[in-house]
Length: 193
Image (tube, rainbow, N blue to C red):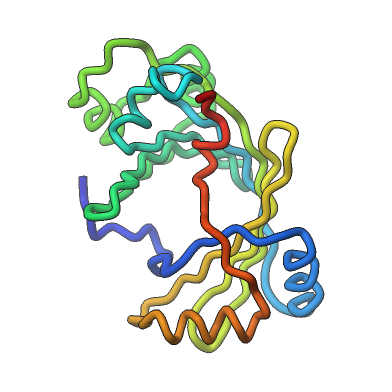
């Protein structure tokens, strides 16, 4: 798996949850800027129970995405010391086979097969994300609203090719009037403890 592959987007420098009020304030501040998109995600693992979710236990996230009528499969490593991701376009037929636990041929299937899972892949949850991307001088601000189970989550991420030190990131947060909270990956919200 290539660690340097970026898939046309700058690296994420930070990702944080925000509140509904902050989300609305950001939308109001950037109502004349940015582009909107929507994506549906299907998260996959070997179980909805956290202790039996083998990919999650390896700090891996597997999901399928529907965006703009196109289908893709994504595998991400969430280990802080070695973060990488792989993505491949798939057909509608491949997408449908995922619901039966069948991974399409390609880099992701080869990577998952190296793990030697003892249970089949299954759907563990669905999310719907509405996203606004805003170009700023320092990089790209991404503002998300995600519907997951019966809850709505709001988060921002900041992407830039420039190297940013924590002080600059803090200044950007202050400029946007954001209270920085921790970030919980969507997969963690889907898994049952």
